Each structure stands twice: as C-alpha cells, then as structure tokens.
Length: 101
Image (cartoon, rainbow, N blue to C red):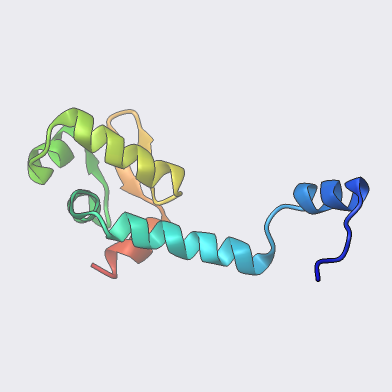
C-alpha cells in the first residue's frame, strides 16, 4: 500500500531534482543514444581528439549539412561536443565516447 502524500511532500519531491543514481542512469542512457547512432559515431570519429572545421566534418561524414547539424546538436546538448565559430571539438565526455568507438 502506498502511503498518502500531502501536497507539500509532493512539491518537495518534484523540486529536489534527480538523485545521484537517477542522474547517473540518465548519463548512461544519453551515452548509449549517442553511440547507438551510426551518423553520430561517424561525427565523433571525424572530429577526433583535436577538433575539426565543420565543413570538413560534413564532408567526411557523408551526410548533408542539416543531418550533421541535427546530430551535432544532440552531441552538444549531451555535453559531448562544442562548436566555436566554424570549429567543432569534443569535450572530455566526448573524448570518452571516442575511446569507446
């Protein structure tokens, strides 16, 4: 039987954010999604350890620019890549992904 939760307790539960376990599971889910897509894997490999100009990444990946932008946006939101001007670089988390490909 589930105990009754009053409105204040429910609000506290909603405001606390994820637990450490939930956050770690979310990180793992994001990693699997990043590595589970072949276009994202090609983007990560193309960027490499030293970064690369975005037009070069598009050419190497063999996908159109909008598709690369879509997947690169996913990698940016996950904290795996950064874009500064025309340069794309992997973050430390992104380098972790690269080492697993």
